[in-house]
Length: 525
Image (cartoon, rainbow, N blue to C red; front, side, top):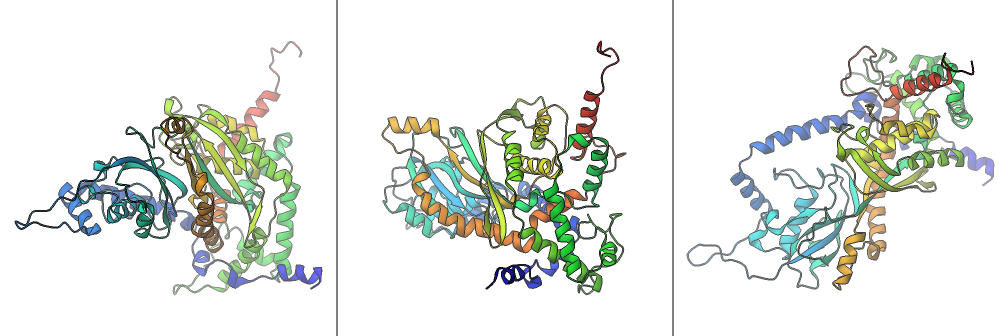
């Protein structure tokens, strides 16, 4: 097949290969706020859990695990044979899809990784029947708590286990679903606490490279950047690569038979934040019965072309290096109060140490180009990594100097959006200091490298593939950045919790302008 035929084949629009119709029928705001709805439901569930009595919780937990306690002739439970219990570090991996996070909840109806894991310990005989209903009796602790839907290639839990059986790991895995695996069990000292003695943690974030493209023309963010560039042209980098990509995508839409007049009629419906948006057209996208209208079909066709264009995007070396430099700004000790929630600048716990950040070379999965970002830090706060990724990406997209990230470590409060949870996974905890103690006692170190082959196969099948498939189906990252680009904040509205993420652009240009204006008392004047 000739090169021209190959190119023509690659540019063919396959509408059936795009996202589901239900995605097009949802407006941008509703798509992204599904996560917020889930958070609200989870909060309501927490209130419900508090209302459950201790006895009821125990009974439901017992019933859920179906443990059978043999009885003596008088009907009293016969205690199981006492076996020696050892303090251990259990190295595990899991896919968080379908689970409400890592940590066990009081409500037995809520599915968590720890509930399934502890259940498997009991059924495999690693925990006695008497201790199978209460994790506290075994001294259970986890090294890192992951949120709903977040994955972990490696994590550690510590507790007292019965490990005389040489096949105990195999037996535990037989009672676990395939998306949760025990890699190994390692003896530790009696006082081992996997959370407190963890030296550092490594997280990975998978990001499609099209996320680094500049905002679409005529969106709120694009208009703001044009305004600021006109006033302060020297403060922003030119982006001919991004401009060329949008021009070529626009031409592909016209080549598909869609007129400029039709595009103008759509306006910013594709990226609009919802039906209440001033930029969104009044034309309905769907009928009452849920079928797409003619206008809805037009919107879908335009989206399909843009989606295929995004998926075929290949990042330049210059743009990739800029993103790497943006991530490097986080290295060292900084005040990350803006990168979490509920922390003030003066709170000592907001100070965190990031050892290294690395961004891989691009790789292509099913036509979409991705990069892997690894962040090695001493400890992390809630939502910190997702906000770090969002901010570094924003800086590259708008073309301002990457060192502007340093301003976010100051005392000024800025609201930073959270990048999608979809791309986040815990690589593994690290026990550099404690491993030295273990080696002095002739114990093996807590080391995940011995399971590299198994972990890589698990990540590819149960983590990476799920991330790639969900992004391909739902356009999660485009949904996030499309929402950011069209977000409107009322400048007259009071924001006691801080300023909008867009305000950092205004502050940056204002501060730079003030620095360029010489003082009246300057002796050089």
